[in-house]
Length: 163
Image (cartoon, rainbow, N blue to C red; front, side, top):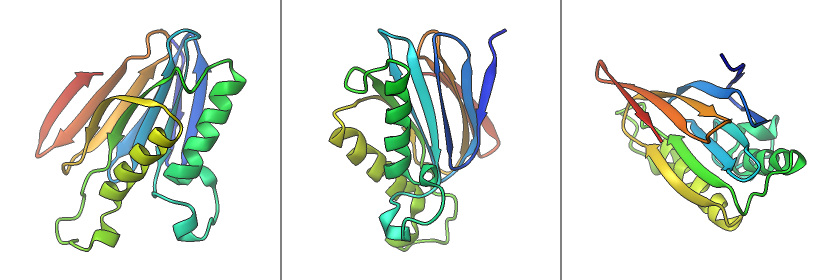
């Protein structure tokens, strides 16, 4: 059984050729995976908030979509991966609180928007997405294939898909 690296909130990990990188409990947070099929280098970011500058660039840069993606790209390059060749998959961005209607407080939606904007800025193709809704998600990136197994719980139902 391949080794599993667990990524927490505001964290990321990269690897090459074998193993699983996972993250649990994606609510309004987003999980972004990048994978270069040629070199079998991949990584996963679990970002809590959309833009570091909006929050005064405080604390850990991996907790923000924009600066966390920069870190993920940098470390993928260190392992020989090419971000321009990489495929991105995006998960999470749920709307967890139904009583929140202010656009500013819809963190999940903003996380998804910023993730898409930043991926486009770096020329990285978004090839799969499972975002929005109300449920939490867990994702597993298989470094040998680039496939992501996603498990979502919503309204008491468990949904599993491979991307």
